[in-house]
Amino acid sequence: MYNSKIIGVGHYVPDNIVTNDDLAKIIDTNDEWIQERTGIKERRWAKEEDKETTFTMGLEAAKRAIKNSGLDKDDIDFIIFATLSPDYYFPGPGVQIQEALDIGTVGALDVRNQCSGFVYAVSVADQFIKTGMYKNILVIGSELQSHGIDKTTRGRNISVIFGDGAGAVVLSREEDLSKGILSTHLHSEGKHALELATEAPGMGTRWVTDIIEENNPDDLSYFPYMNGQFVFKHAVARFSEVIIEGLVKNNLPKEAIDLLIPHQANLRISQFIQKKFGLSDDQVFNNIQKYGNTTAASIPIALSEAWEEGRIKDGDVVVLAAFGSGFTWGSVIIKW
Ligand code: UT7
Image (cartoon, rainbow, N blue to C red; front, top):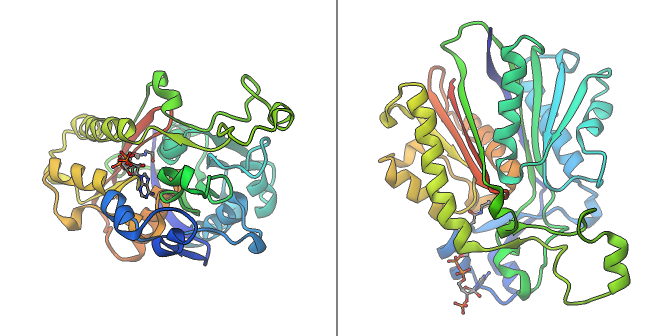
């Protein structure tokens, strides 16, 4: 048995900054509402002419993570790519990364767990490394949300929240079992699947041809839908539960947390968790103010920024936690 350890982190966000005031020009919204309800000041939305996609952003983040890891691209044994906004309906972007990095025929797995995607992906990578099957795994979370949201007043509870970006990590074999990823916990509750979802196109519901045929301007099924307050209530409860589950598993008191990196869904959710666990501002990392909610990319972008800012030191207990569509949620406890 081995442990897995994060040995390289990297992130990439598009240059184009969209402020709340920019949104107020196209949507009936305002800076005060957005900041008060979500904490978001601005987000990145890739410009159409820059031709950035979930794959291209993920690739850039991956290159940076590999460089920081000190490994060569050819040392990567396996790729895991988490996203809800793939370039193609299928195949997923994992294989695009394999091709672009030119790393032989290593396996590429795509994870579809939305906001929990990165936590799920890290958990899968951890299991592969623990059993000795792979030594170095590239895990990417990347999202291009801006092309798929309803940027009108009708969709304002979603469109002001979501942003584009990518983050990546390299996980590697660690022989010292007191270091690296100490545990991961994953959960789901599918009865709430449609409380936060994009329903169409789906083979089981309505395919693209049906949508075109119906030509219904009031059809919103291909835009994300979120029952905001319902999701919020579940999020705060599940975040707390799954962090406690991880701490208990490792006999760690909540005071042992050096840095909590929650999925960046809403600053109010992070602040609720911070208060509940009695953590100081230094013990919680938030960057939703700059990027909005980048779903599967939010934790790896935050992890990469926290690392760049020197907020993570050797031996620190770092906790990752996520909640989102599915519902799915999970946590990762790391001894850095
Ligand atoms: O990442 C996955 C997990 N996601 C989450 O955890 C998100 C959880 N939910 C939330 O973060 C919050 O529910 C939102 C930020 C989405 C919404 O905040 P809220 O405080 O729950 O607002 P609400 O949906 O209850 O809407 C309150 C009012 C409504 O107007 P009325 O009916 O009171 O007149 C909305 O129409 O705010 C209105 N509203 C807006 N006003 C200005 C909704 N969106 C906007 C907007 N600008 N962008």
